[in-house]
Image (tube, rainbow, N blue to C red; front, side, top):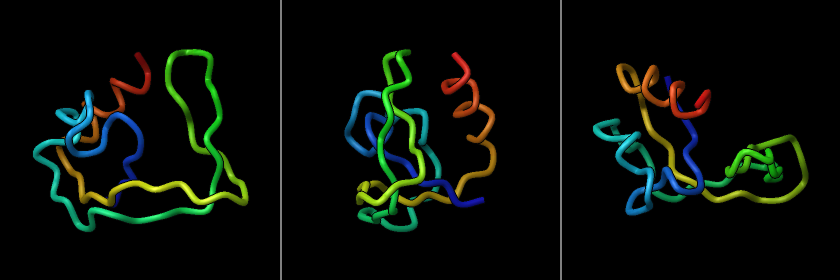
Length: 72
């Protein structure tokens, strides 16, 4: 599965260890969306007309770890 990573989970950021050792497919990609404040200390992507920059990864085993971070 491909996963768009943005914010603190990008390479070199504070939570990047959650996406390791996922296979980096492309280091700089964009998606058409907006960032929304969740009120939980992190932003979420929502449909929109802005460009959000991130990284594209191929994940398998890391998906459960990443889901745990999001649900935390």
